[in-house]
Image (cartoon, rainbow, N blue to C red; front, side):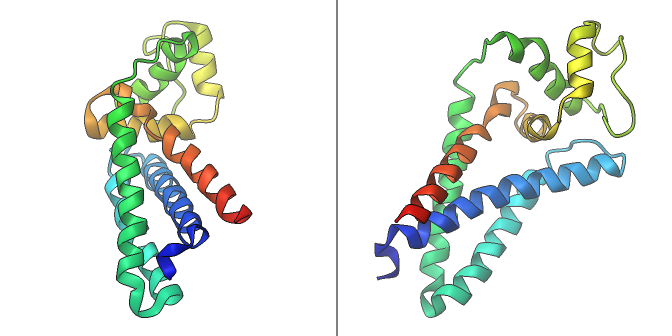
Amino acid sequence: GVLGHGEVLLLPVAAALLSFVVVTAFVEGALLLLGVGVTGAGLPVALIVTAAWVASWARRAHGRRWPVVWLVVVGSTTTLLAVSLLYSGRVFDDTWDSQWFHQEAIHQLAEGWNPVATPLTAEQVPDIGARTRIDGYAKGAWIWGASLYRLTGRIERAKAFSLPLMVAAWAATCALML
């Protein structure tokens, strides 16, 4: 049956997890380009877009059984995202780089700093080393984190994208090896 083969569902779950991350970054990035800033709106938009994409795929790939497949893929993806969100809030990250500039970057983005418009100032981040890294490093992971921080109000939840990305890599690898 359709649900009996792991490769049939592992790849769509991996794709759904990646879709969620990419759509979140796209929406929040577009808001930065428009001068709005990170709002957290990318997360619910990403859930809706991902669920719609999975429905479209499931209809084409599985015909009449598409609702069951859709439910399994979207349910698995949503459950993993929820577990990751809950778990990330329980784990305190006390590594030096996280405390020094990663967390500061997420905080600044969540508080309205727009890296598209202006670099950070010494008033925002007094430590020149941290400010240089924040201005110079890629900001994708920080934008995802700031979106989660804006939505939940908890900075520790900002790292919730790590587990879904690891599971997506694992699921895609397993699906391609089966």
